[in-house]
Amino acid sequence: MTVCINNFQAAENSALAASQVASLVAEARLALGYSVDDLAVTTGLINDEIIGIENGTDIDPGKLKRVAAVLKVPVSAVKTS
Image (cartoon, rainbow, N blue to C red):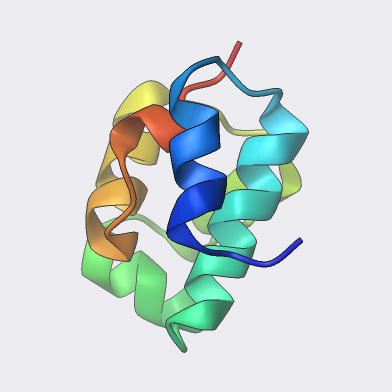
């Protein structure tokens, strides 16, 4: 899947599975050139939290909002079911 605004706009209308959110976050991070370390520092999270989000095992809404803000994607794009 290619990361583009259309992917995120389509996601706005419904909650996504944790695995879909994980893929979107990982792809958006890579598209912006962030390493896991970079994203962790920028969001104030630790590497293990970013890895957990990208693995779909950590879907804490507060963490997802922080990541969405840094990656400049709509918060609704990382809303999980």
